[in-house]
Length: 421
Ligand SMILES: NC(=O)C1=CN([C@@H]2O[C@H](COP(=O)(O)OP(=O)(O)OC[C@H]3O[C@@H](n4cnc5c(N)ncnc54)[C@H](OP(=O)(O)O)[C@@H]3O)[C@@H](O)[C@H]2O)C=CC1
Ligand SMILES: O=C(O)CCC(=O)C(=O)O
Ligand SMILES: [Mg+2]
Image (cartoon, rainbow, N blue to C red; front, side, top):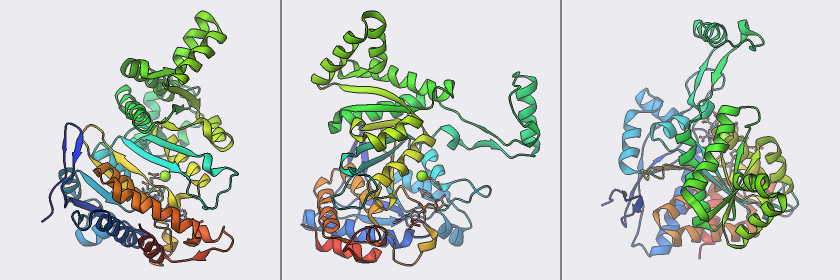
């Protein structure tokens, strides 16, 4: 009989047979979930000789939920995940321009999963558009509950937008809406609390995983009170809560002001030599250039929701694309987490048993690590390295690799299982 995972004092307690809810997902979701669950089960079986086992519990969301219950995201799904703490999901469709709001975003907001963690690393042999993809070793911490994803927006021409425009013009003295009659309006909340808990978790992650720096990525020159404040609050939490474990560029600037640039450079060099985490910041546009040209300079990246969404797909491209980019939505305070791939439903490939299941498999690896089942996690990453370097890959890699053997989604899972241990 399976048991529930619990969290005590922030530490996940995993029974030998945990019950883990899963959402299969829309589009290619069923293909990649079938492949991923087989790989996860095989790794757990092999690592623990049958002493440990995951009991999967299906919960519904998306099209499958709508077809069976008439609701896109049934309350029962939220209740079960809240109760069982840890879940894993395939991608869910979100209509563009109208229709219902994102179910993926709703799950993150309902369960207050404030960190979207997306580690990006290179597997040897994966085709990449850059010369040195092996220099990419970063972990993105994307704030997951605020920013424009809060969904506060009003449609052009609606009575609501007219009221908002009138309020802005009459009561707030706003005279810079270029075309007030034909504008839609969106609002972007970014808070001190939301920022601080995200940046706190990113610095703790850098400490725990031996990373050298945390970069706060923002567009604070333009959006001063949201993105600019993110930078300021980020430095505050670093200095107030991590003390001499970190050296911040805010501190660097204060030393420049007081004692000049040479003294500040020396202070930073001393901090690096002492193994302190350097907390720095970068404006989002130049950051996107730097991760292409000088990826070694960045390790942990803390940023707001929209920047994090863009950065995840861009960085994933450098190491082979979103077919291999894992993710986790985590609340480090309650221990709730939903693991999910970075990519979407890829609808044109739905049901073809074609796409790369690695994103959701590696999301499962993050889940196994979160559960403390590191031996099973390592079996999968080692097997992934072996399989890719033997050039047995799905279509996305095969089309860019000389001499590759293309296999189906399920075939890639077979190969991973065969190459374990
Ligand atoms: N967390 C989630 O559940 C997410 C959901 N979505 C939703 O998914 C839907 C489709 O979004 P879209 O913008 O097309 O993005 P997708 O990520 O679904 O697909 C875009 C392209 O990425 C490539 N790709 C995606 N998944 C894989 C994979 N597993 N293996 C190999 N290649 C892959 C394919 O490229 P190619 O054509 O070159 O082969 C595909 O055509 C939308 O409704 C969107 O809202 C989007 C992102 C995240
Ligand atoms: O919810 C969606 O449809 C898109 C979400 C997304 O792109 C992401 O989380 O990276
Ligand atoms: Mg995205």
